[in-house]
Image (tube, rainbow, N blue to C red; front, side, top):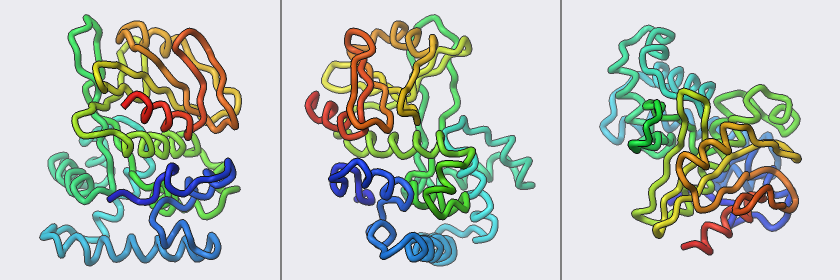
Length: 259
């Protein structure tokens, strides 16, 4: 069972901000204030590292895993490079990969694989990594309040991870999700394959989102049936035929309609 999702708790546009900041764990989201939410997440991370992982038979030094988890948070939405992370932490690349497997298996981290197809393009082969719950991400990045979040260098990557999780949690068994990126710069944050359709999704933290040439090239490369640009807007609008700017709730609604 995932933490609380937009489709379960959000009734007003303003509620999105609270869920994004605090994350979807009920005790964090429903706390009386941001400070109490923060303290709950602090306790969760401490207990997870020192008690939950050992109870699952995962024997890793809590301090080492905590440093790794924080580094992953700073790399939110970026390509996973085991050698680079290992060098920063002073451990081996296989150790870092094993730690990544542990966090993915315990459902606190998402590894998003690249789209693979014989398109005659030089495709990125490394996965992208996300801390799944935005509240835990913000704790690991020391982001306590909305003002801290909106002025943080990680704002865009945090929003991307938040929307990725909301969308991926809506997908049914057998529906495929990946990202698309070529060496030439064509890119889509999400490619969803469901019911014989191919859906492209780009995520922007802007009230007036603009897409790049790489977005249009990716849509053309993949032959998507429809594409959405998900942004923190109050209502959506069309960009082109079968391409539309949508709110997060509209994106979820469209996916449900297709299913």
